[in-house]
Image 1 (cartoon, one colour):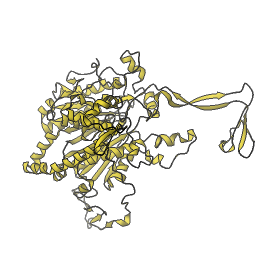
Image 2 (tube, helix red, strand yellow; image 1 turned 180 degrees about the horizontal axis):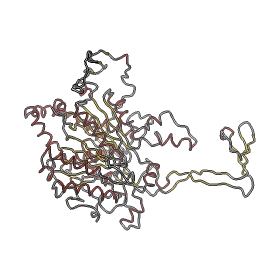
Image 3 (tube, one colour; image 1 turned 180 degrees about the vertical axis):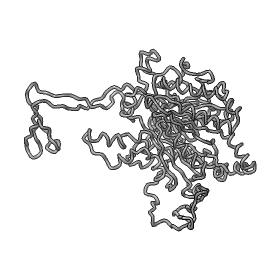
Image 4 (cartoon, one colour; image 1 turned 120 degrees about the horizontal axis):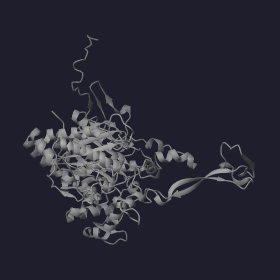
Length: 640
């Protein structure tokens, strides 16, 4: 019997806020939401950003004055708007007006020797040939250099790029748990995965009682690795700054660390694990691995996601050197502005644009096989029947487009048609575009969409592109897409491309629909969504995501209406517990899951027989389950 991977939890953090219970989605469509939804969203953000705190049964501001939830948006709404989504990079990262730089210079003394004193312990280990050193006393030495001295002066340059998609200003990830100088991407991992797990409404220990220890998969990564001061950025620059690398910086910089942290400090998992990299399609690759593990029966639960923290001067400088980023001058030129760039509109997918905007994000999702989800009463947010990945073939340059994306989207559309019918595909589906906001992307991706739409007789395919709100988070871009897709099925709105003044002339759109305003489709108005991703190097991926109302009809067909009715009854208490977490998170009282040095096992703790392995603390044993692989070629003792 087939195993359908269903989504039972989502969590994370990006420039629009917390992902669980669709909070970041709700911020970008807030003008269309009910008063209650707006109130919860702004209250959660104000708590997260340190503007209010919950104490003695109510909220107070930083002066200790009581404030009612229905007044929070009025009081702090403008501040929240200015300090979320796309905006000027702030000093929580670095000052783009004084980007760190070392200015080269040559010193001379008009033919005379340059003379200076310094502490003897600070002399170079290997003295340059033209240095003459003499001791002044036991501590100091005099240096004479006859023919000049090359030096580097600490400097600060004005960056050409000053816009970024940053976490809400004031959010202190490192204060939420014992972060121990973790790189920012790993702090985001701990927060994001904890958010996803707690959104399920079922304790992890309870889930473990229903599965074997090896029936869990974790796939998570970061395309760039952890490149801030506490990771790769710190150890790679240490020697040039006269510092020493620490023992943590290199190992914590590895791109697989998000998965490793989840296993070691959140789940305590001994199951399948991995970290797939596919540039900006990395989330899709991790999602594909989790989906296939569940399809095959190898796993019953999969945690998939990505975490990326690339708002650093070095990474922005690197992408800027490629000409990939929207510079301040180019943004201003688009608007013919003499007062500087409109940073909130820096990313303009499928309009007249000039480059993408770097962003940070961590997005994680909990998948289960459909049978386990029904058994536990887990809320079903949707399902991912498959993720298609294809390369581009021969390329002119590593960043140039190719043909792989036509294959991925076409196959995803074919599967969508098979599962839900052509009418659902044609009339009740939409696309979350990669939509980077670059001139090349608007042409190439729109051509992919338009050609596939023609092939399936889709006449008005609705295209959304959420990077216009939260920027491009590289490996996590697909996670942002999935996060916002699930929000549509809860609140009935497909986010518009609000930075789009007009569709660019070179965009292919005969069979497509680009909307600036949010499109009201209703909670059951869309049966499926396509999440498209295009990464450097020819890493193309498209995920098919099914709406929860469609999934439940499929499960009723598979398991019977009675099983679904029993599931609905079990789900009531689960949803209540999930809502308790949402209340805590909105108040700012929830803490991430982080178990350091907790129940650490060694080999002698295991009970090993020829039939199973018992892992202490786990209800079920690890056993070998023969799925019929190689039955036709197995050799018996007598045949060997």
